[in-house]
Amino acid sequence: RQQPASGGSRRPRGRRPTDREMRESSNNSSTPALPTVLADDGICKPMTPQEEAQLRRVYNLLCDYGAKQGVLKVLRPKQERLAFLRSKLDDEEVAEAALATELQTLSCEVDELSKDVANLEAASDGRITAADFLEALKALGAKVTKEEVEEMIWEVDENLDGCIDWQELRLTFQRNISDRTGLEPSKLFHVVTFCLFDQNDNHRVSVDETMSMLYARYGRSRMELKLKELFGHEMIETGTQGGEIDFPTYLKAVEKTQLLTFLNSPHGKAQLAKAGSVKKTHGHCPPRENTR
Image 1 (cartoon, rainbow, N blue to C red):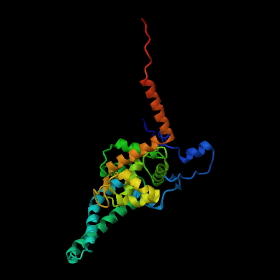
Image 2 (spheres, rainbow, N blue to C red; image 1 turned 90 degrees about the vertical axis):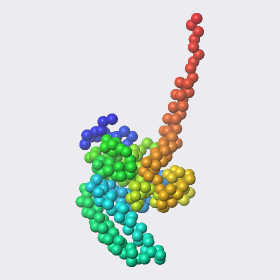
Image 3 (cartoon, rainbow, N blue to C red; image 1 turned 90 degrees about the horizontal axis):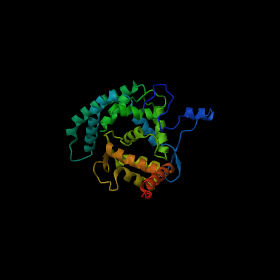
Image 4 (cartoon, rainbow, N blue to C red; image 1 turned 180 degrees about the vertical axis):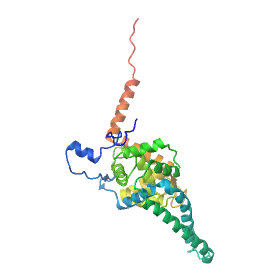
């Protein structure tokens, strides 16, 4: 399908109307409230403060990601090494003097690189471009084209400027956590949610990283089920922090969950019933008339 030019009025297929469109269609000037999520236990629950804080972190990370990625590639390993060395200081068997020089050097390097990242973020125009998102997806190990990334952005681009700003990112997050049909455009949401869970930016998601946010959203009774949806029923210790998965594994799990959400929705059940009816009709061949 052809994407609309900037300033076009046609909405992407499957996307919910914007606030402006809903107001115009209902001739009501009041602004509708953002949707809230209906938790599995039937309690209406908005975006949690922890989710909003982490979403803001991901937004800042993705803005001008193309410009920052060179600095981040150098910064991340140094941060991990620095954290490892600081943990060794608690080990009585390790002489602190042997680590002092490397610690001091690393600390200075990390501080300088962190300032470079902060300066880039301060100079940002506050928009996530297709180029930024493409580089972020490549860093996560995803094999996508520029056209596919542009399509992901277009699905949630309310003002059709070809970029994602904070309000658009927040709105698509709200819409997806509220979705009970499995039909909400979610490709960009799945990437953002993975980054949301990946709090140490190592391009992997661990059980420990996801537990607190899943607990805040679903409660203790549903948290374990959600963990099993992501990490499998065994949740074998395959990495640090209680086991880790990469982005392709995560994406496969959440897309399966979204499909099940659709199949269990009234619309999905109606589609299944219709498909079954068609299959039954086509599978039954009437007896051929004897023309002799």
